[in-house]
Image 1 (cartoon, one colour):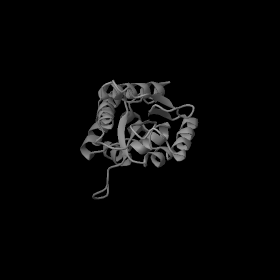
Image 2 (tube, helix red, strand yellow):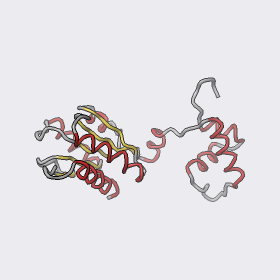
Image 3 (tube, helix red, strand yellow):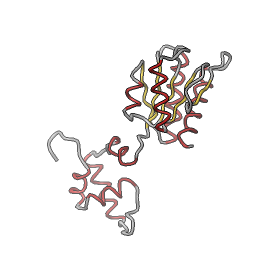
Image 4 (cartoon, rainbow, N blue to C red):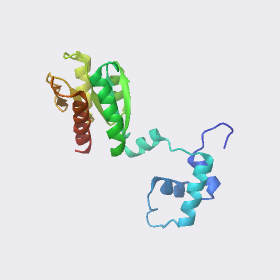
Length: 188
């Protein structure tokens, strides 16, 4: 391993004295197909990974699997109580379902999502009228099968889930409902 470089799967294989395939199977939790990987070998791989400080590259893993395990929260203002509650609910709920929340403030959500940055997005409190660029991005993402949940009173493009903010609803209840509905769309 190069000095100062992040350890790779190749470094783990070398340190454990096994093949790259064996390391891949062990660290991903797969059984090894037709070949059984012994417990001592698995222990060596885990020990080598721990000693080297190996951390899997989530972007590479996502490319192989065709998903990111990331959910974006597109919000306008962290000072807004609904946006803050949405971020709090997402941070609490999404990891329990295997998703990492990412908060995007402002208009950066379009580029992030269109570049494949997340499996789904919740569009938080924004002006009731969406720009044509917003609607076009939402329609394209829906066509790609990206899960979308929009907090709005207006009608979204086809394929976009909507949750109308109830003036009488507590912000935390609305936020939790938005996260739960997006999870349902991700699984469905």
